[in-house]
Every structure is written in C-alpha cells, then in structure tokens.
Image 1: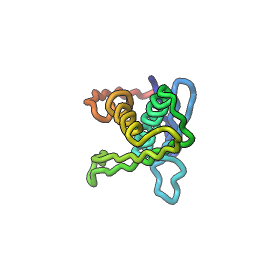
Image 2: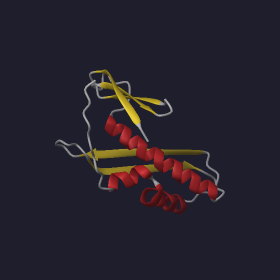
Image 3: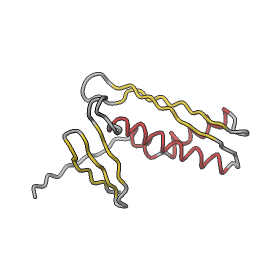
Length: 134
C-alpha cells in the first residue's frame, strides 16, 4: 500500500493512493479549515473500518440495516505529542432485527480481531524515513 502526500499550502496537503483516490488534509484554524486534520482522519478511519466489518458480519447473519452511524470521540494528551489517550464510539443502528447484544458482540469482534486500524493503534510500529533531494 502506498500513499503520496503533497503540500498544497502551508497547512493543507493532498494524499493520493495508488488508484488516484484523493483526500485533503487540513491543519488550518477552525475558521479556515475545509477538511479533516490528521487526528480527525484517524478517528474517521477507525470508525470506517469498524463500520464495514460490523455491517458485513450483520449481513452474513441475514440482518436488515436501514441506517448505521458511528459517532467517534477522541481525547488527546494535552502536551506534545498529542496522541489519543481514549477513543469512545457510539453505534446508532436502525434495524428491525439487530439486538443491542448482537451489535455489541460484532463491534467487539471488529475492534479486537478484524479492523486493521484498531489493530494498528494497539501494535508496536516500526517507522523508517528516507530523505531525498531532487
């Protein structure tokens, strides 16, 4: 997997994957901001990853889903680096046949077993950097 991130302005970047799908990253002040910041994108990635897993598992159980929403809130450390110290997700589902217990079970499976983003947040990563001057 490869992402190329390019500066568009001092605090605005564009990230493009190998299939040319693009997303803007925005670190400007709230008044100027038009896109999500990297920490917001991380919460969005976690919720999106979990949502896909949850819906797939429920559909395999032949459940009907009319609407599904995840509201994710993150608490960050006050000093640099301002990493997340707590992430809470609220799952709101409209379904005639999914019980709270069932949703809670598949959500747990997603976050503990299947979701790549959740697993990455819990893992020890190895970072490397290469500097190139054209």
